[in-house]
Length: 101
Image 1: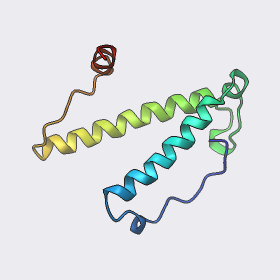
Image 2: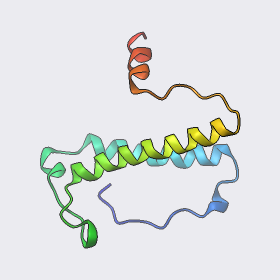
Image 3: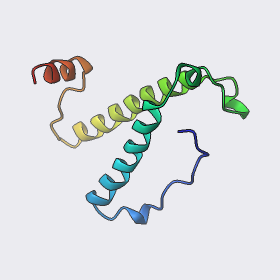
Image 4: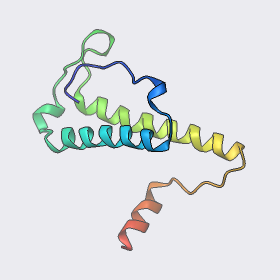
């Protein structure tokens, strides 16, 4: 998000669902702020170094979305294995549900 990487938070900071939600809300707010101010030139920047050198910002953003999908699928599988009913994660169902509002 235009900042240097930070160490992950201490796991002891997350004592309940409210503390996890508060941390996630902060991340989401920063992400939305970053995306709202992103320009076409920003998307074509190559700010990384090392093994990631040469990647464009748009490629990194696409990776983040895709990687999140991978984690969501892993969690859904674990929940399913535990007998928890889960909802369909298909994007089209989201579109249909939000279009009806």
